[in-house]
Length: 376
Image (cartoon, rainbow, N blue to C red):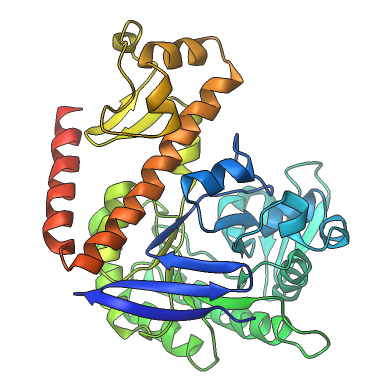
C-alpha cells in the first residue's frame, strides 16, 4: 500500500503528522535508525521497539551484494528476514553512486560498480533498484538518483539533477508496473546541489508524477550549515503540504531541529550508532567522549537527566573500561544510549509542536547546543 500521510498540527513550517503503512503508523517528525545490512548494529529488534523506534532504514545496494534479493524474498521480504514487524524504508543505492566514486562508472543506463566485497562487476539501473526493493518488500522505497557531489558548478549540478529526473521516471514506471502490486510506496528525490533554481526545477519535474512522499537528497555531503539551510528554506515552501518530506542523511541533533523548523518530517543518519561505537555519546549538555581520561574514575552515568537502560545501570568509568577492553557490551550500551537520545529528541519535538511551544523549545535547545560546542 502507498503510505498515507496526515498532518495533525503545525507551528510555523513545522508539522506534527503521521504516516500510515502496511506495517504500522509512524508519528512524525521521526528519526530512522540505520540498519544497512538488515540490522541496526548491536541492537535486537525488541530493543529497538523498547526504545520507541517506529521505522528503520536498510540499504538496497548492500543487500543486493549480500545476501542477495532472492534469499530475502524467500523469507517473504526483509521484515521477516530480519524479524522486524514495523515500517521499513529502503534507500535505492543512489548514495553509493556518490560514496563509491572510485569503484563505479556512471552512464545513462545506470551505474556499474566493482563490488567492495569481492571485486565483481555489479550493475545498478533504476529498474534493477526497483526490482530489489520490490523483493525486499519495504514500506517505503526510494527512486534511484545521482547524488550530486559537493562542490559542484551550476552546469555539473544541472547535468546530475537532470539525470536523476530521467532515472526517477524510469524508477516510477518500473516500481508501479502492472505485473504485481507494489509492496509499498515510492518516494522521489529532489536534487540540484546548492543551486536553488535547480532544486525547484527538480521538484517541478518530479511533480509530473504521483509520489506518496518526497525526499531532499544531496545534502550532508560536505556543505556548510548555512548552505544546507538555504536550500531547505528555498525548497520546502514549494513542496506539497500533503506529503511527507524526508531529509536524507541528516544528522546532528541541532541539524534535525533546524530542519524540523523548516518543514522536514523524516530523518536518517548513522551518527548515533557510529558515534556510539567510537565512544562519542550524546547528552543534554553536549557530546562526551567516553575515552577521555576524565571518565576513568567517574562514577556517574553518561547523562544524569537520561533514563535509558545504560544510564540507569552503568557508570562512565565502567563504559570507558568496556571501550578500552574492546568489549562488545560497551558498543551495545553506548548504542542503546545514543538511540534513546535521538528517539527522545523526536518525541520532544512532536510534543512541542502539539503544545504550540516549538519556537521557544527550539531556541533553548539550539542555544544549549551552541554553548556546549563552545565549551568543547
